[in-house]
Image (cartoon, rainbow, N blue to C red; front, side, top):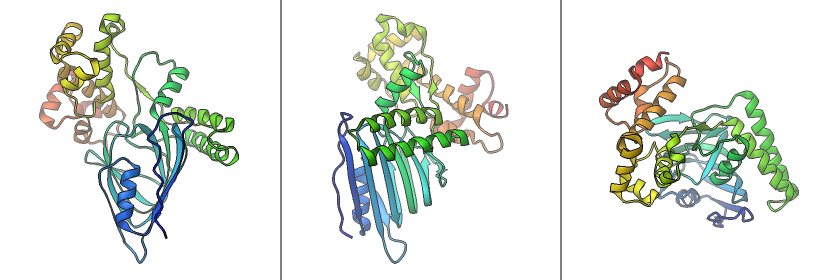
Length: 327
């Protein structure tokens, strides 16, 4: 098989079509090509049987694309945070994610939202995987119109599994996308209508979680502080520094610190810690007490020292994490 590669567009206008393929029989080429497709630094691929094969295809436009990844062999690589929301499911073979030390298995024919706001490791063997990439800006725009979000930040829980009813709606939206590509292509009115159906199905299948921002941020004088606060809510699982917040808000480090003190009476990093604690509590309340691992949840939200985490949690909520988990 001859290796072929046409670089996908970097993004931009919805009219930019996406159509490319990478394929071949060489593990080194597979690792290089697939790392390039995912915007990653380095992936690895290995032959497991008598023959190694790989093929990755994508078709659609810069807002939504349908993709397929196939390999006879083993694949592993770090996935950086994407500018898209990515829904993936297996049709054969096995695959799992490593998200901050926690293993997440991808199940056959079950759509899974890949982690949105944190990097992770993807590993698969002899797999056939389907994916849909949805541009974040498009999803946020449609969500704002349909769900009356106002100015609240939008985030998604990658651990949520869709119920059967929503799975059927998602499958119907995918069928409409595929049909639109066959009939009219990514420049047709049929494709535009199918994209709207797909975004609606995505929002129903993976309902967004909303953070209510403090009312003080609606005041014009707090517009720059609001930018910093929104950044905290959007990147709470990542490393966030005061310098990051200063750059986002267009303020000096000292001004950011003074603004947080003036409005919230806490430092920027204390505000970040409280947001993280809120996220941990939300996850613990949703976990099965028999299988829930408090340490895994805490580490995923940036708490490396579990003793200090437990004390901070108790100070904020009046109970310890294990008490929340048992509710």
